[in-house]
Length: 176
Image 1 (cartoon, rainbow, N blue to C red):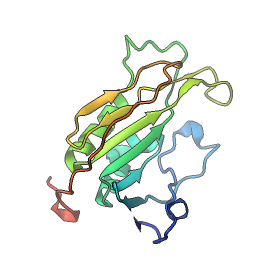
Image 2 (cartoon, rainbow, N blue to C red):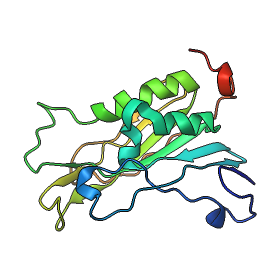
Image 3 (spheres, rainbow, N blue to C red):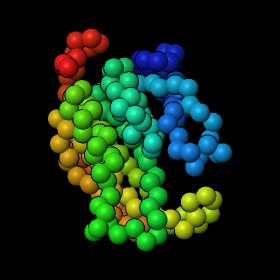
């Protein structure tokens, strides 16, 4: 195993640490600011991780940085809490993720997979909001493979086969 952005180790659980960089203001009281990104080479491809609001940092800088670091696939868990009265018919959920994932996937030939939780938030600053899933899979051409169901009760397991695409470029050779 080889880790870029970290030390080489034989045990992946000790080698790679992610520190969330783009925290929403509502979380500043609860979380320290992150200080690192990493990717890890595996037998299945090179993976990067960004957490929740990392995915829509200005100009998708975190996703783009992971791509420059060699990510073939970016995993992006998120917990996006909608107001209790959110109407998905009038205001379809998922646009913020598509706007963030699709351009990066197209530009860098990198698949991006966002997975969300579901359920009602019972405490803390977001009490009374609902996490609504809508997990999202974008392939390395920027095509949406699927979006999970919407709603606080939309619990399900979704599967997708991923074959990482060989890196078309590196460093300054990326197409503009």
